[in-house]
Length: 168
Figure 1 (cartoon, rainbow, N blue to C red):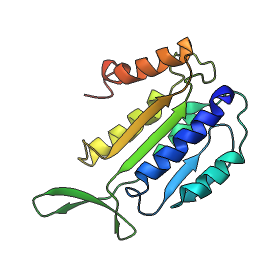
Figure 2 (figure 1 turned 180 degrees about the horizontal axis):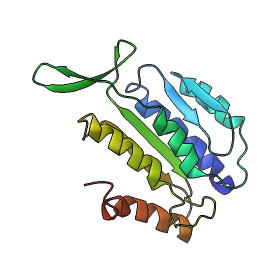
Figure 3 (figure 1 turned 45 degrees about the horizontal axis):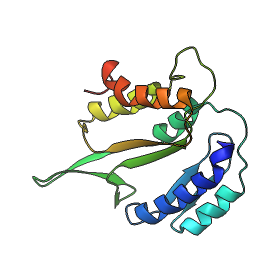
Figure 4 (figure 1 turned 135 degrees about the horizontal axis):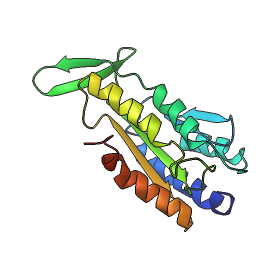
């Protein structure tokens, strides 16, 4: 990711501007190559955290994504006839949106996707058990660069979840 670090920062800045009204308690920022984290309603604070992290080495995307998705625990409450909303500490929490800014070049793994589909399958199974089958979790991979490996991995994730029976 090092060659794209400035582009990643600019994308984070733009995303922060676009989604800040959707996440009323603030945006959470995580890194796959650093223990640094950020949480703020102000994207300038997130950029400050971002600027303190230096890109280096490969990452374990399965573990990083799993950590984020594992923390999401929706509680389903029916509201009138209009559908469902989620509660978290008394506040409305409509769902989870995860934006993964990546070149798709993670650590070498036994399978081409390095197990990244596993935390996605876990969260989908948890939502299905609660009857929350649509529009509660969104995961968007935003790719940087033109690595053949990265493009192939993300394309396989995009179509492969259905092929693996994880998405219907």
